[in-house]
Image (cartoon, rainbow, N blue to C red; front, side):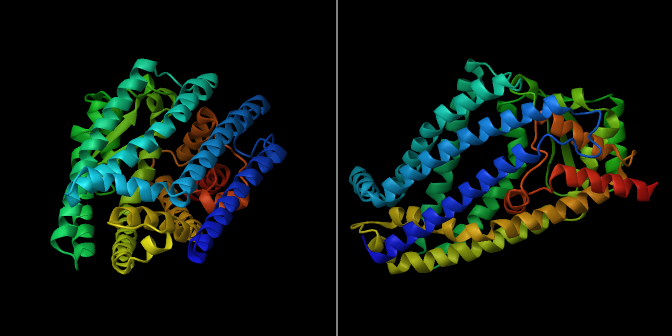
Length: 418
């Protein structure tokens, strides 16, 4: 094994070790402090519920840890055990077409990854989620969802790969720019058509027409400059008791989608507060800012990938001969995952800043200033969320401030408003 490949392996193992250490101290912290009922949560949760939360979190994390160890081990064997070179050679023997080779190369890898995740998905859904009263999905529906998602991902991956590889073939020197442009346009296109074409394949969307809540939502959003075209309820309860709500649409005109589970567990003021928070993200241009940062980094990544792939150094380091372009892309993705790890807490902090701003906006906009706090408390209770994450773990992984901190800040802002 070359020194460079060994160095990459050691760094990867150290990073995974740091990640597992964060998971470990997070669980230990929860066990030590997790039975304390936080201020503001009195009357909503009790010690028995916190014990249930402990058990749920530990079981989920344990399964996640096992899946991660197995997945990482397979990845290392694939890269360092000579299997990537054999796989690349086998794919090359199936066709002389660069585009067909690339489609087969990545589609088969995608299927392999999905196949490996199936046992863990089944266990999480029908063992853990069942045990704690969340799962409502039948095995028939689970299989149907798997088939649908596989077919959709196959079609979309096939289109993206065919177009991307055609661009690479036609423009050897500027493909990094054209591929990035294509991906950007395609992602915007998918954001537009997904609510109308893909999402209805999985859920039934029912308009809230004539409902007083719909009129209150439209009136509130109008204050932010958002025109709500329709408000829909989806039958999320046929899969899970978990709750959610989201916006779809490009520009100022939005569709609002509410989970039926959310409507069943929250009063109208709390639903409005949740949507006011989402409206705050739009008003403060958080989505646009994140998109600009992500696309700028993607463009830089595409250029770096072009420069690295042009040298052929990755194939040399991992001893891959012949047409190694697709294998090098896999190795490059592996290396990028290592390089990006130290930046995770920076992006998390950036996201948490946006969440605090959106909370502030929701407190000012919502009809009841403390409604967002009570909605978050209910969400935490209903989803068995860990109320006592370790500060290091939260700083590294949490895209939202810990819910206890959020609730405290929202109550303080609500007092200021009153």
